[in-house]
Image (tube, rainbow, N blue to C red):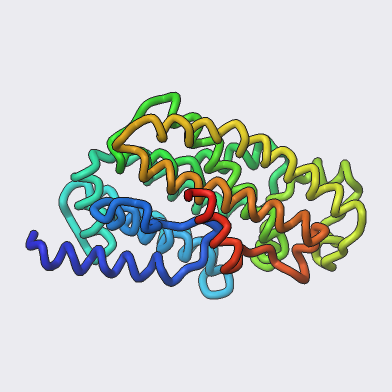
Length: 287
């Protein structure tokens, strides 16, 4: 395949990545330029699938599952050299250059399918099991892009990625409810006396504050357990740029948790979001 088509495909993926807000930088300028395109292609692949899963008002569950099955088949075909559009042209180059197996990409699709068919989680363990497919593959793919795939680093990466996913759940509990999804564990809601009707009514009471504080504390523990990965990557010359990206990601995620607490747990009227000066403070941590 000619380089012009590959380059234009990566550019297309980059535009997708740059057009969406995330709590963490998808591919900051700390990532070596030659690796950013790989990250953009994976992000675009996941973003397209996520959009299929998130259109309940436009398509039925069956239609969305069929679209995800078709996306999965396109992924398999991509590994066999059958390419359909810019996303898979770019992704094919990424999986070839970085020796990426199909499993973590298929796991992402499993999570998107789960979003279509499962909208309540009985306990925290069920939420963590979801994160295994929805979040953890991203960190492992990032390590593979940098040429690393070992168990210790993967486990630490899983901690950070799961914590990021949980942070997004607590941050967007009201937004997710509009899609009839509740990731707050049902048993924790019962424990703190906060009902689904309360959530639908955007009731900000002490019960909700205690519930969210409880979830945030567990999430912070995961962030803290995964932080060792930053120190490990600092010791590898070829991973120092990744270490800087991890710093931005780690502090970006914990920054959102702090924003929630600073807002007195009011996620209904003031969605926690990193602003310009927050991001400047993140950069200052690297100086």
